[in-house]
Length: 265
Length: 252
Image 1 (cartoon, each protein chain N blue to C red):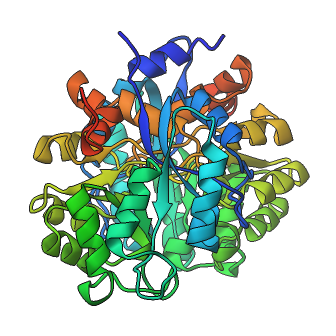
Image 2 (image 1 turned 30 degrees about the vertical axis):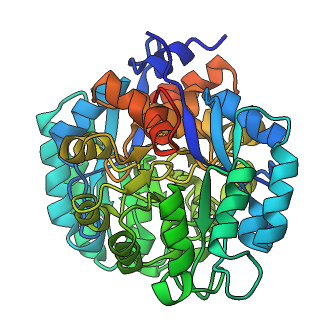
């Protein structure tokens, strides 16, 4: 008996579970039309499907200006307290500015995690200019969300990601997109080998049985719910987790209990 | 409220050489994925027809889905000039005799190696249009200029674009504004708010429920639709009514 099944098929917000979206964005982006990209739009869509909290980084942050992106993030979090939280965007091409941004953003309690987009910035995870960022995250025991895309990403492959997580064991590392649609097998191998790695559910090309595979291989405790909202609408991910063939307790973990265990919202 | 009745326009059977994760090769496996998502009926092509040989794959499809109610065949076709497929009129006759609901084409040098232009595929496109048999094109195997040309030259031909992603709105919207024969399959059409936005501009008519099962899970497309902020009638149309109408099925 799946208590979420009827609600999902009826299009009703899920009850009895706190849903926390750990991987989301904010605002427009240059190569796509995003109909619901504003903070208010995002909260409205969250309400449709029962997502209580979302951690956001602004889309403009990784290709252009991290300061502008972080400003947008801070404004959104301030405008929607208790609903939107911040991921501070950093860029290894601007190491001093990134350190300044970390100090500025983490002075605000609604900023919870660090976001790195190696593909967008073109700065490899093992670039020595990243060191200050990693030291900041390690010292505070922060979650660091990294965009990963299996072997096709020379800047942030899964293996580069895992090596960085190994080098900085005090931080907690979220393998964004779990390495992409072809990255599932490598993702669970690396998560099994490196205890401070977390997987996330964020994908547009959602392989059949991927959630079941992750739970079977690494257990539910290190799988975090993520959506890519508003790049990708968050509503598909509700069905993907809520209708997965896994125990109810695992769904509750993935939807939000895992994030809640580690973060003070 | 009753659950939506899903008629999925984008499913497959057959082994894939490079699976995203699991290889679910047969009709029974597909039916299992459909059941998990609550999908009762699907248009199905064979992976061998797409990645191997269309003629062989189409024959394998008919064997594989025989005895599986709820799975309707889609053939992968080629232009006739090389003799691998019959002349257009005969091809349409074969499609009808086999109960084939739609045809897929994969043009371009890196796919099946032919052109969609009239000098190559015009005859078969004309025949499909005259018979009202929808043509399915995968977004990655055609350019949007080619899609425009097909829609413009073959006004009666229903075209279903599969695998449209959240990056395609700026191509799609101008075409949707000009051609009522254009349809969008939604397995990857997952941009935030896009269903509400598209329905608000063009109505629900262009949208067709699709999942790409068993490569993808069907559960994502299901909740994209159930949670959409649109009328129930529009959800029913997208879930299956539009496709049934396109296929000329009574009562749709």
